[in-house]
Amino acid sequence: MSKVDFIIPDWPAPANVKAIQTTRLGGYSVAPYGSLNLGLHVQDDGLAVAKNRQLLSDYLPSQPVWLNQVHGVEVIDVTKSLCVQDADASFSKNKNVVCVTMTADCLPVLLCNQQGTAVASIHAGWRSLCDGVIEATIKMMGVESEELMAWLGPAIGPDAFEVGSEVREAFIAQDAQADQAFKAYGDKWLGDLYGIAKQRLNKQGLNKIYGGGECTYSTPSRYFSFRRDGLTGRMATMIWFE
Image 1 (tube, rainbow, N blue to C red):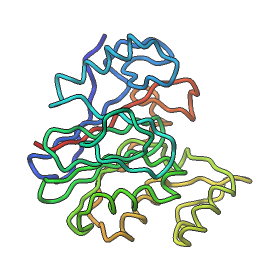
Image 2 (cartoon, one colour):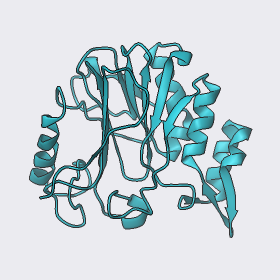
Image 3 (cartoon, helix red, strand yellow):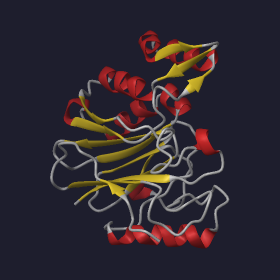
Image 4 (cartoon, rainbow, N blue to C red):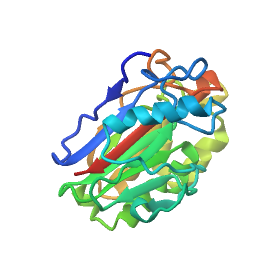
């Protein structure tokens, strides 16, 4: 087992706000989940996943509040969560409570306020993004959007996210501006999840946006990608404040 490989988000968050993005490296899982798979729902060996999750404890103040992600827009307050709930975003206004999102191509979005008193983690797959999971999270946080900043974690990039016309039309039906995030690719389209997320954040009055430069699909050595591999692991994007 190699050393756990983390990304520390590069954004001007308050000093008491902490965040970690895992990669696929540094865990106990074997192929096709090699090696730091944190998802229990992908047919990996449960003991290996448990050991991988235990590796995180050296870096976190408490166990992450895991979600059962369903590609919806449900947002939960993790400080009130008593079980693994169906949701695609979570937030906290309590110290040392870890919000977490799992992805393998979908877009993870972290939010925090300038005061360092509210944080959120969002699973923005295309369905959730289209249906308004970012907007729902900001509303549930109860924080002025002008006080928030966002970090966009590794996701499938705009040169790899091939979709049909129905996906493009679904986004444009929600916001005509989304047309700018798609380019023709034969009889398909290439979609820019990063670009759409930025549009949605901007419309909420949130302009401090960081990250958004990594492509999971085109970097098999470091990232899991469901589109690329099918059967694969999941990475975690975590945030809390001290």
